[in-house]
Image (cartoon, rainbow, N blue to C red; front, side):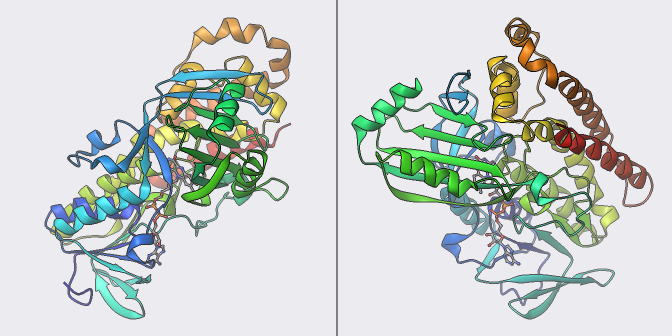
Length: 449
Ligand SMILES: Cc1cc2nc3c(=O)[nH]c(=O)nc-3n(C[C@H](O)[C@H](O)[C@H](O)COP(=O)(O)OP(=O)(O)OC[C@H]3O[C@@H](n4cnc5c(N)ncnc54)[C@H](O)[C@@H]3O)c2cc1C
């Protein structure tokens, strides 16, 4: 099919979210065209990402090719820069995934289901005419009943309370050759970790920032992941990685990797419009506590495809008929993400000393950290109390904010669980203003000293 020919659905963006939507929609018999402005071999993320190990089974996509998985996480060791405080999660329940291989597999899978892909094709979305959306593909106009926007990170159109300084991070991930194995071994020993463990150095640039390092069990490669908040006085993810490489000359040439910004913002807006659905990073479907968007975007794509296909088959792709995608997402994954927004805001305001106190006291660690790694709501974990009591003097100044955070997390979770089942008119306006008010309160947690 040429993209000038009639199509049921246009997907813009062949990253993990767009390609997943293509698999599901094409397998339902829809005429699907996917466009990406980049060449075929460069669409989507090009680095290694951690995803929950339950994801692929949950999505029911069949057997995932071996080459997609880089490794399964062994131990996750969180520590601070000087290494005095640490907390360990055994088998955190995540897989490291080669995003280049995942995207390739998803694209080929969608093609086998009948989807057509056009690379080096830039799309722009035009107005809705009451039945179809106008779209422009490399300058040529076309019309389509349903557009799925999966274009990856961009600043939100409705900026609302969004500010890049509070709601986006810069991240970088790459895999390097190890040039000096003996020196790599000494580094592991000094850090008290084994090959295959992920050492996660928290608060490298204060607050919400991280440097993760994983030396592979054969001591051949090392994976480096960095993320810092997007603030002028802070080093970017790339700069943190560069400094780490300079300090560790046993690390050799880069094999692959890349970086960009990740949205961490609270999701209050609608993910549908007349003839439009949005999935993935473009609408910030990212787990806020560690900036993971692959599983979130793929799950959203599966939900959107289910609702979108039914609407196309019914011949009515108005927003009101696509709305259940909003409520399905916000009541489930959205509520979990919302739960972590107050926690993210407060942790992003921590000084390195406060992060150290939190790790030493076990408040960043244990069951809470395991749940965050698995993108689940953190349980109340009373087992941390004896350890926390030993650090009560350091924690005392932070306690009022920590207690407000827990209350607010529960409150926003409940609010998202009650996302209106119908919209965009009706209860949605009232829901939206309360959601924004709760998120403003959450943001204030990061502004207090
Ligand atoms: C360094 C780093 C590390 C990360 N680590 C993790 C991790 O461990 N776990 C995790 O889950 N997530 C991680 N993430 C986030 C994850 O990579 C993203 O959430 C995910 O890749 C987003 O997928 P997507 O399909 O929404 O967007 P993308 O992968 O960005 O795909 C969007 C596609 O749309 C195309 N496009 C954009 N505009 C147009 C247009 N107008 N016309 C045509 N095509 C267009 C682009 O070319 C691109 O190919 C990390 C991100 C970074 C930067």
